[in-house]
Image (tube, rainbow, N blue to C red; front, top):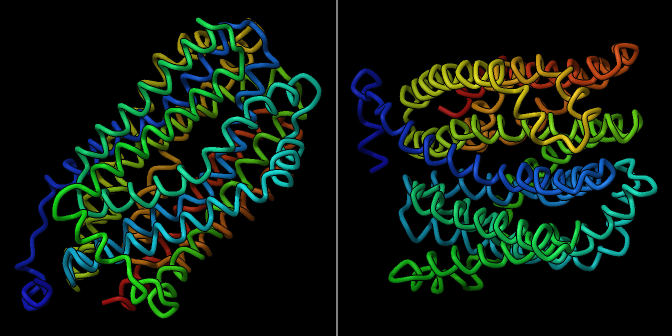
Length: 446
């Protein structure tokens, strides 16, 4: 397959733009379903009419965004390497990548459990939780933390499925996962009156249910037999693990920087009081919804550009970047329009008090701006991951974070507007740095 692609002149290698939507649309639905966990949790605790509890759920969600999402390299790295391996070497090579991913995932999951007594209390304090917010957030976090091994393994397994374009299966699993999570959350919190502990237990049960579903899918039939055969010393020796770990080291560090930026957002929100923390928590969940929606194009870039790297198809690689950016910008425009029209009532429905609703409404303009500020960066993230340009991805995130820090300092007198304006600038700076890097990286790779 590789030699066939390589032998064609660039002019004879047209791309199939329909496959962009075939990957992006299921990924959008899947990602939005994932966002409904945080959104659903915020809505459920909003029925308790307590700003401190709603703020605690936001702090807890940010904590696990730092603790678990920082490990998202397991999914991203596996997706890119599986896409490249399938184009070059076939199914057995893809299973070898998954075995390495699962080995690393299990090691990280066990390590997180061992570090729980140190990490959990210190992260809650670092996020600015105090008094009633800290007490409620601790209850939630103590329960959800035990899902760490399942979360790590699920990241590797889902990356494998995405890298093989099994987007329908990913969609079904994620939708079922979210139905379980939200359904149990409603029952535990509002039906059984478990309070914030109910949110923690619904997350716990849903994560292990997801592991059972995706594990059964991957292990069935000939794929399962091939995967079990790939569990051998050859695939787990240091020489085989080193390329996987190298890619994922850069992705890990890049995600750490991103999570630190998001943690700063929470910390600075908490310093402005419980009302601002709760309001910014709702705005942040809308950003997460935006990011996960537009990340459908990142998923498409990971798979399609990863395949073009495996096929040594420079023309197809560049053409997919342009095509995905164009379609992503159209989706960003639709999302911004939706926020401009509907954000007010949506924010009101999530707010625990009128004061929280008023504070959230004051920042609607940033919900309109952020999709445009973030779109190109999301797409370039996918391109860089698919091509294994992970060191460049790390450097672009570091550069954007310096811009973010400088902007936070300069705009501090502007209050919450300065906080969200700096965040929008952070997203745009990341995209600008990545765009400047692309021509040199393409020349190096092809």
